[in-house]
Figure 1 (cartoon, one colour):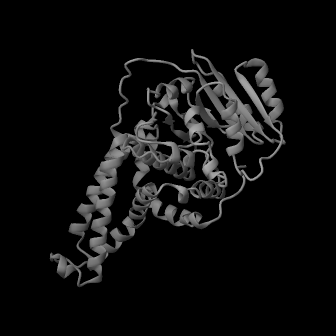
Figure 2 (cartoon, rainbow, N blue to C red):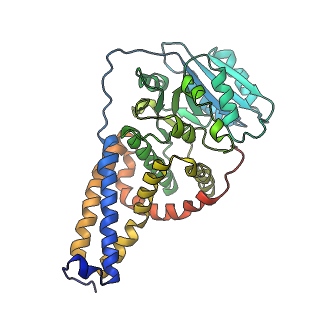
Length: 383
């Protein structure tokens, strides 16, 4: 039976459930703050018109290790882009043992803009994808490089055009959206929700002048900013982080822009099993400990408030007055629904709107499952 009394703060603090209710109010306030201060910046984002429209030469870079099947399926999407300015597609074949070499040679006969870099020796003391990617960037002819993965395909033939269109005079980094293919099953919805939720944060933070990460499935930057920060040298010892750790170091409020035009997206195959997804996320989250302090604080405060929101809601409903607790929940719900509805439409994840409350509650278990990765030693390989 809930206790239905109106009392002042001092009276509340005489009861343990009073602490719970105050904590619930505080966490709700934090969540509402993040949605109104940060996430509205993506929900209402409209790119400004450029005074001068200019296309730039672009070097697309794809690193692949034993990706024969993915190269056969996805590489044509990068090769048939409609782009009127000079561009090239560089595939760095990193010590593959499968048929990748021969598939690439066949494509090169038809597409002269395809350049192949064969790596036949492992880089000592540089785990992961950073060495092949560094070789690809150094090989690139053009100042603007556009990165994606072998298991990704551009959503349209205008991917290069749209991603480079985000460059203005001061722009050095462009963050894109790497979505997943829509498939049947609830796991697919969970994977796409997590991808969307991550993008909601890194796009919104970038719009707030606090860029902290990008995803290698769809990311562009200038070679000059790569060399100015000495590539990946500051975190060469970490297997992951060729995308988010580099952006965390190099991105500023003035040199970073976002591109959320649907023609600029890439699509990749989602993990098909729970174990595959768990391993993928464990690898990605192992880099969070190397983020700048202010980014760790902001991301941690949001994740913690998100994690404990529903447990505090449930306890408050049982031990406090539902007539006070439910309006607070409703306030967050309405704000959250409105902002997520607009951002899901913007990022092409419309079908997740109907599931958003269930997916939001799932995040309690998500944080519980993946929080342990913060304390695990990162893997030394990228494949």
